[in-house]
Image 1 (cartoon, protein in one colour):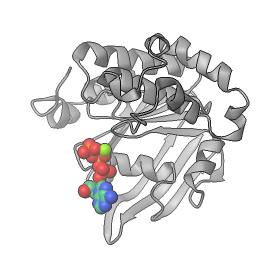
Image 2: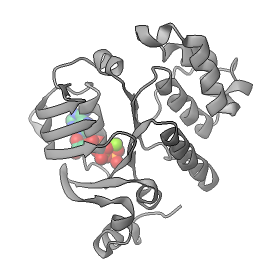
Image 3: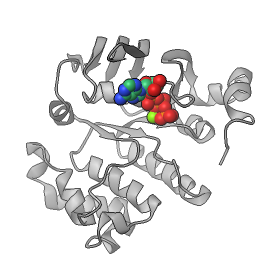
Image 4: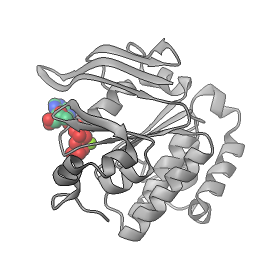
Length: 239
Ligand SMILES: Nc1ncnc2c1ncn2[C@@H]1O[C@H](COP(=O)(O)OP(=O)(O)OP(=O)(O)O)[C@@H](O)[C@H]1O
Ligand SMILES: [Mg+2]
């Protein structure tokens, strides 16, 4: 479904992603894990067209995304929940959701999509007229995901959805991600919570200094001694 071949991404003279190749099968959960600064967010931004300085190829259902602007990439069915949520904090929950439906295809079915968002995230329904800025961290993360779902994506890219959440909410967040996946949404998940991410991932890639250091099925990597030692031991929280 999504195929990346030999991707290099640059910030001016600095190269942040080196020769990355990966693929995301339709219907799967793919995790992208690695330390701070490994290039995870850069990779997502390159896919969604926010970062344009790139070499190599990004194919979605065989079509190149490399030269497309972000709004065209959303139209093709790829939605990105960025690091730090980026909500409009002075607008209400309802208004934020509505803004997620800006592409023509989803504009026609806004009411239906908002109902669906409230079904998926009942807590948002209770708060629909509140300002997004007044929500808790977990509720804001749910709103960010619900907003990204408004464009009816085929692939949802999530950048650290569990960051800053309490252990209980982290669990809820991962359950939610699995629930979305069961509803046929393909997931590309960036996480620092490696343990949880590998547990639910069909396929996983470990990024180190902008390069793919390891790949395998989530559960295989989870039990790999090298991954355990480098990422799941003392430096990484299991919560
Ligand atoms: N706008 C930018 N301009 C210049 N360099 C950047 C920019 N954004 C990121 N970088 C650099 O690119 C590299 C990869 O950063 P990126 O944000 O993709 O990492 P990450 O894996 O998402 O890290 P984290 O886990 O901390 O979110 C880092 O060395 C970072 O300093
Ligand atoms: Mg990041």
